[in-house]
Length: 489
Image (cartoon, rainbow, N blue to C red; front, side):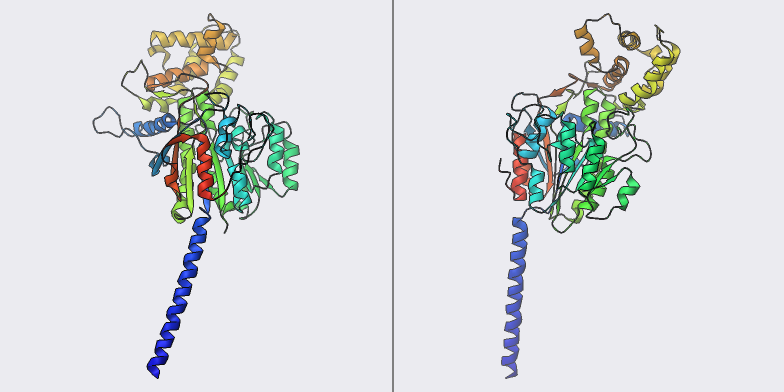
């Protein structure tokens, strides 16, 4: 009798174990079908493979001379270690060489549109759904982070819909009225800052302007985070170039880390992080500023990787770019097969800070001075490591002509020649970055975007889907597939 009862008890235990296993498997299957719980979408504005590799070559050059046999040639960034490495094309609906609005729309909505259009069709009559909006509909919290103004083109495509990226106030108000949970980056780029702020506060957002205050916000609080410390130019509203960032100013990694803390919840989150000032530095052909901001972007990616290591089966990280900028290349005719990236460390500040804090006061104090004196030569050497006395004849000619153009606006060149040499940048600062970059073995073909393909790097849940070569619209479509949402565009 005892044996029979014991067998019945064992059968009951086995039965309940089977039920528990079935429920566990069903629950796990359901969670799997819902896609990753945490999704990070990193967009390096203006960043193709060359911007990444230039940063890696620079970091290596600071450690060893690349001409030494067996020395380190590239110190890989975090993103370069991702297990899946794909590539995508970037063209817009109406142009081979795209802009950030059209490219951002493709990355956010999986649809082509025209230059300057924000998340609408080319006729600007129909709005597209973004992957961030669909994540919110699914119940995930959503964060949008950028190192430039938060109503700039790339962040805007995830939460707004407007015929032109220049509708800054409209975009800011759409952001203030959105149901997203976290925005971080530069100040509004519009004349209606106070109006947009008031709407955001009425809608439950807390606005912070320093890291200490941001850290005091409790998880689940809706936050608009920015930095009261303006960048060196003083009129862009963006974060500082990483090369110029003073102690106490917030970094892209700071905003990403705090965003993770605020957004984490049982239903998960979607976070887009843009390294926007890579693009701005490349427009100005400032390789050192672009390198430092690429590294700062990678530091933000590293914050996501730390989180991934705690949630490896629930997290997906995708890194890509909207386009390349500047036509940057590693290799210059004047240096042949040699590179000297270590000379870039002689640059102490970005072109923007040099313009604002060195050249502007110099010009004011030396109005009418026709020739380059010892003072300006000393300033050039102190901030770029370029010794006028040892410069070659061609470099001296370039510097003298740029100085004349800077001081008087006059030039012996045609307007087309001046455009090729300086575009709309300060003639002296852009000439200095060009000379220093060439000495390093870096060259540029443009002050604008280019049409080369860009990398798509992935790690985590569904990473395999991002392998291969495809269009930028497919990045959003692949994200939607992994996340189990329908863009319905």
